[in-house]
Image (cartoon, rainbow, N blue to C red; front, side, top):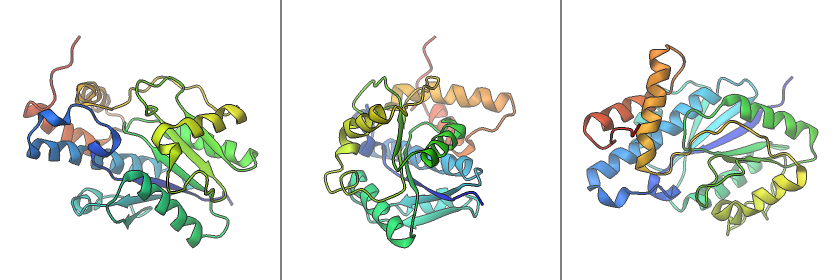
Length: 239
């Protein structure tokens, strides 16, 4: 039997993760952008839950997310979490999972683009089986302090990783060090990180191409982006 890995995803407001340009919008438009963040997480959860070795758990902090996550498949579990700093929520969630399950394996996934490939996580978990404990995967090139993609998988709870300061979340330096030491930084094709409103046109048109090709696409994210494009929140993409 394939071991099950708990894959933890976190609903968030863009302001919590360093989205740029929010200050130029009114409160209602900021709420639209916040809704986009929740839908990205929902689409990621649905896609990743197709992997039989993952038990996907979303930690939500806002009542608005109940409607967003209502249509997710039964394999995706939703947990309510008190609203606090995102790094603190991650730390508390990891502690909870380890307390609930003996010999738990946990993957904390942080991504703002619903098009991240599921195969990447699967490959990383396979590497975890070959290593003593910790696997870290991330993109080496960083446009700001946050990597475009970073996640950590552990078989045991590590206070130094998930302590109160959460230094791994703040800068990524600790995670990058672990990845370098274990030589497990997996090269992957560039996937544009969504860190500001200027990236939303790119994401909208990328997903639209998937829609036209009738492939799988993150439908919740697409519907929100389409509405934002119609109302002018998303500018036209520069060619």
